[in-house]
Length: 185
Image (cartoon, rainbow, N blue to C red; front, side, top):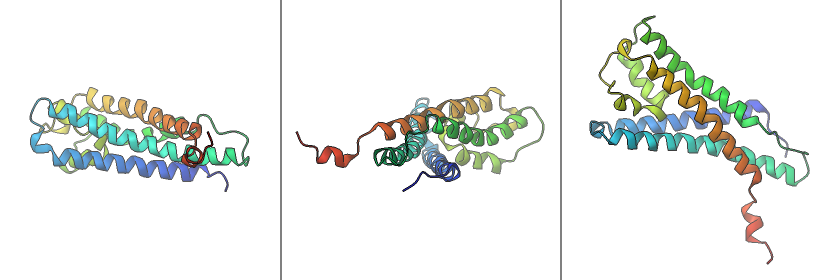
């Protein structure tokens, strides 16, 4: 067993990120009929963010468990400290690209179609209920306030690295389940 290269770790994190956003988008679309109530979008954004952040946590946790096994078997001397903070920032930068497209649209650089806005609910599915909180679900993208895409970017940039790094730290610091199971008292 050897340490995985950073590209493979990035691909796995990217897959978890996309899967979390797609699940959030599916959840938003499935409860869209109820999102006109004032409190449902707030509950929905908590759940979609929880789904996204728990999958990012899982990506870091799985990598942390592999690093802990390497450390216990003395194949490596130490674990990389800031790997998932850097990976999380790279993944957040990727998630910021569709939000930047939306930001340029709000400044009038070009006009977005309804198909892009529908796809945006799946691409940025973790924050899709924010459209309903801001009452922008029926507004053309050119009339969105510039603060909306900036808020989406800020949430992704702050939460993604923190969640992935916490998962990594839990994975490296956690005892293996077998160690608890067969521990003598």
